[in-house]
Image 1 (cartoon, helix red, strand yellow):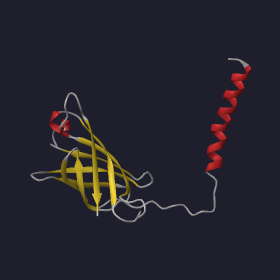
Image 2 (cartoon, rainbow, N blue to C red; image 1 turned 120 degrees about the horizontal axis):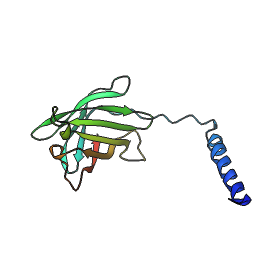
Image 3 (cartoon, rainbow, N blue to C red; image 1 turned 180 degrees about the vertical axis):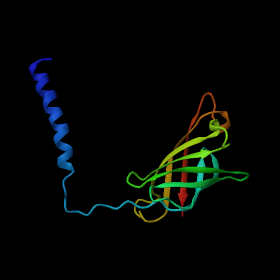
Length: 150
């Protein structure tokens, strides 16, 4: 590597160390608080299957147990809410004794209307399945989901 290239790499490296610190400075503007996860039942669409995602309570560490309810059946869900990231992660335990029936969900909370951030909320994300009992196909095992909370 020639001298000019070394100098350029050195400058870029220095900027990556210095710039994040300068943007993290206190601006005097109060930090925006993150909304809590609304509890209760959410209207859910998991790859076209309509149902409810019900989260009755959060533990102090953000963990929860709840259910996904569809027309003819329901399943236990267990997961974690991360308030800082506004992220939810949970497992849907299809057939509790068969891990290949489980589905792993991840999603993010956001307002349904950006001009009304304290109004109705949405969750959106993706889920993975681990085998045919969970709805997986050899050609596809990754799907999308959304949920709305009035």
